[in-house]
Amino acid sequence: MTTDTLQSPRFIGPAETSIVLASASKTRRGLLEGAGVPHMVEPSRVDEDEIKISLRAEGATGTGIAEVLAEAKAMYVSRKHPDKMVLGADQVLECDGETFDKPVDWDDALGQLQALRGKRHSLISYAVIARGSQRIWQAVDRATLEVRADASDEFLNAYLDAAGDDAFNGPGGYRIESLGAQLFSHIDGSHFTILGLPMLALLDYLRANGVLKT
Image (cartoon, rainbow, N blue to C red; front, side):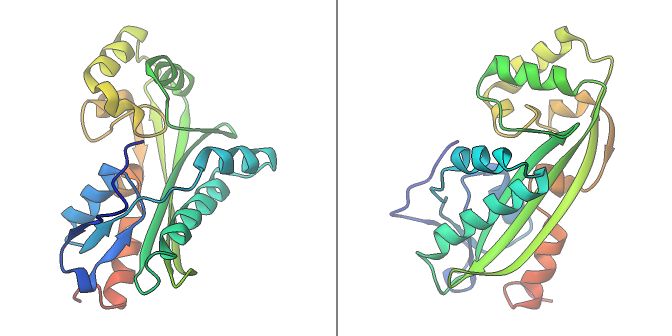
């Protein structure tokens, strides 16, 4: 995961009306920027791996894991910006009762794509807004996707070669907004959810609370 400096948060839009994105995700930044949401970026430093290990040991669902991580990120950064809305988000891939993390390397990404081939899986995107270290809003959305059953190992390897490190930025090892679109035989759900945010619900909330104009 890439990170930004905590000492100098990056502002996009008027600082006095901006929300804080508690994430290092370039994709989530791009979604907010594209939708015209004024924001600053300050990634959280929560230990996501430790939280996931604990939750999986307790038998947590993909939705439960995404919720806890989204809230943990929002709360972590909210302590530094108590007067601002802090947006934390997380995405979990769930298939046949198993949850997938971001692949750590090429072999892991290939293994995930092979495991998903010919199966329908869910991408669960959860978002939490905290203010003053209190959760004040949450939303979750789910998309269903199926990797082509006829996607050959040759194609999967060629895709990963073309995607490069971008394949390691999300669970499943795919970038649906580019060549990764060719991996799928079925997609049902919001494009925004697939990219990592329940975007329309978030925009509704920001309009209702004066961050965006109605």
